[in-house]
Amino acid sequence: MAYDVEFTPEVEALTAPAWAKVKDQVTPLEWRVHAPLIAQINRLKAEKNAVILAHNYMTPEIFHGVGDYVGDSLGLAREAARSDARIIVQAGVHFMAETSKVLCPDKTVLIPDLRAGCSLASSITGADVRLIKQRYPGLPVVTYVNTTADVKAETDICCTSANAVQVVEWAAREWGVDKVILIPDEYLARNVAAQTDVKIIAWAGSCEVHKRFTVEDIAEMRLAYPGAEILAHPECPEDVLNAADFAGSTAAMSNYVETRRPKQVVLITECSMAANVAGDVPDVKFIGPCNMCPHMKRITLRNILDALQKEQFEVTVDPAIADRARLAVQRMIDLPPPAIPARYDLVKARGHHVDVEMI
Image (cartoon, rainbow, N blue to C red; front, side):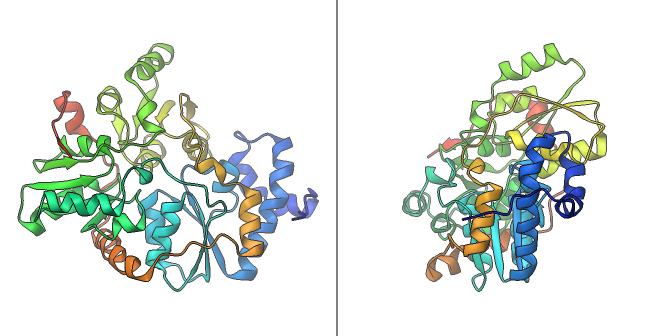
């Protein structure tokens, strides 16, 4: 596919608002390559009645340049359900595109690279969930939205890292039980267990990005940057959260930085998150470390443009699976939005290992 890659004065003017957001993260030389692609993508979106849902882990030129709706999994799910576009392009990973298709069965949902998967989503299958329900009959199953449609179809309600405590407690009340199955992220389950009296049954799944962070990483950051505030994602191990100043979803971390405006901040999550938040808070200094998600990084401006031009890599879900998965996702969406920031005070207050029952 040939691209119009000339960096003309018109392209420069069209992309100036995005450049203002990313100029501290992207070099001028890189921008001369990115800007023509951004201009073409935005033109095609208007022509084809398309929108791009860009996750917080997209690179800055995607997040600020072409994302119509940006945010965490819960926010993007809500926007997919509300969108009146004909085409949805998921700038994220495959389970997110499936979720958009489940919520919008009459829309065309595209993903720029079919290989953009997720280690957490691949850790469990619908068949696994059916066996879990046989082992624990009568208990509600709460499934993290970072799962495939066939897993969601076996689920009572979905959750995200932003609302997991809220959803677990809702499920316990609705089913009249004191124990809930929360799958598949073991670390999220342990961190939720520290904030509620509901007993948690967990699955041994994890995110390959967040599980690599250690308390040694945080200790090194505190020594090198004693004034920095450290924010961690709840998919990290519980000792990492205990060592952090704050823990919450990507939306909660963004809100924390934007409202508190710390002079220095460390985000213990995927690399692009810090770059994207930095575009809105130029007065805050962001410090490493970060780990890169190889799946998220499969999405580029060039393959977004290819997907739109050719309307290729459509994501489909079997209608029978989609109908059952939709109930679980819609139950989550219908709950009131979680309070932000979602501070994990109980994790820090207890400061010790929280027992969960492992499947």
